[in-house]
Length: 148
Image (cartoon, rainbow, N blue to C red):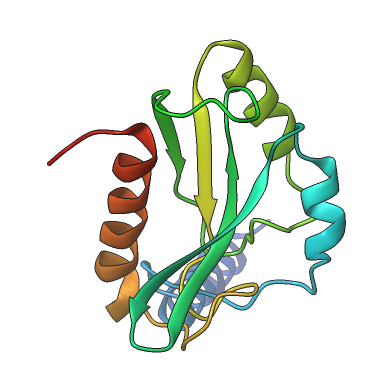
């Protein structure tokens, strides 16, 4: 390849990288593929339950909680903060195996979709990430039985 051809290729690659970076600059919350919430819950360990946490009047974050054992409360809780392109009900997740392993170690799991993602209410927006994360954290602390 000649010098000018390499220069044109490098310029095209730089332009493509610049354009791609401008399209989806982090942080971003993106739309996820269609989900099957009932199937996702069925793949979780026994005792898993649906969870809804209010983040604003009439706006709920939805997900699941997996206890260490059904009916056992107060275990430490692992809070799963999902990537932007995932939902708690995503079929391509390895979350079910992870929650089983954590439960075997004596750790409960909590995972909720961000606002506007999956089955959570609201509008997808990076402006909601801090608010949503705080609500998720508060729910994990509550389920762990910690008094603040």
